Length: 407
Image (cartoon, rainbow, N blue to C red; front, side, top):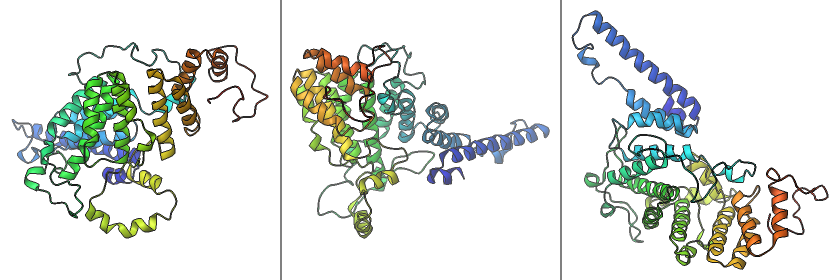
């Protein structure tokens, strides 16, 4: 029942059934042990009960279910116990890293909350509490990096990806099951296509974790390797360019980073990996009929992902890319280009705008001597930190002020 509700995306109900299954498993083992003690068996349990427990399999499923419920701490506790038994499963190590990432940053919604109290502050000089050694299991970025390193080590070398080709004359996939099956207990072994998809996910997560740890050299290496993968979804390619650009800018290679921030590069943000040609031929007729039902990209994203993907459309994805381009120009000292890209990106970003866009606007206004405009932005959008908020009763809601060029 728990597995059925998982695929029905009723994750809380599925977690309820998995919790009941764990309790029933413990009760069954307790009854067997109690009966063995009553019969005075030396081992404490009969021979037929050895290997009957499904405790770790249930913990594995429970952890995955809790992760989809948005409870990364509870999921981490389940998976970190399951990995002691299923330590050769690279997918399990990735799920542990995802628990660490979600614990530290569940989503990007907090960036749009200007009232948030930034106690430590963003940036390279942010004070951080020492997490201790990464070898000790804890939901930190350091432990996430260790988990992702283990996942990459367990995946076969990329020289064995000959079954996934991009040649136009090949319509079918010819895997070699003897060399490409990767064990993933407690589940079935992974096929070559699953390994290729998993490698893309691991590299994307590793690049993000490297940036969070300010290890930009490692982040650049993972992002560059990610963009070389043959089975790369549109969303992963989008993230790969963003991560690679941020790592290059941090390494003072701004010109190279700007090349990855071209909004015209964003043509697809689908979270689904590309289908093999054999599957495309089978679904060709269905795809033609579905194209007439509105926004195909958004519908595919909703059907294909278990967790909502943001940005959900190409317009907002290009706006985010253009904002990062404005930031790179500002770091390079090209303030006119930075302001032009910032103004254009703010028109398509959607409301409320991320706080970083206001910070960049303030920086550009101050560095170019527009103190009056900077004061207006602070009073209008950061009234919770200043008592001199201007009275905006004369302006209609949603109408931009005539003396502000952004937000």
